[in-house]
Image (cartoon, rainbow, N blue to C red; front, side, top):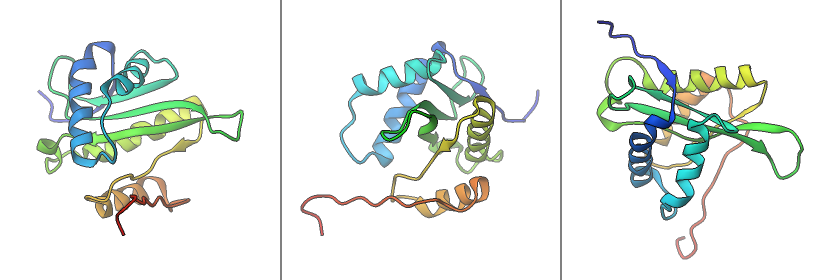
Length: 156
């Protein structure tokens, strides 16, 4: 038995576990309400390799320890496709475990970008734990090319 952790391409059989992970991610870092009927088609398409791909950590049928959702499409100002990270999440039980799951998911995203020949757009869209994730992304992707800010009406 090996302790080596690897990211595999998610399949439709992973849907239930990935949806549960998406709900955990939203509970931790969501900035608006969760609408499962909007999340489901994004995940389903990626699990079926329809203009996207999902990397998951965990053997088929075993608990999923982490995942990354990548979809590709066009930015509003271009006819070129771009690969966009829609979510990268490691289950809290596996964050402190050896193996660097978040790093492996980043590497999966870079490999997908290279193989598809598409630029990868990936970012941090949460305040909780942002510093650590920003440092990870800088190690994996280099200097950031922009910054996001969030204004919440009524909050100053």
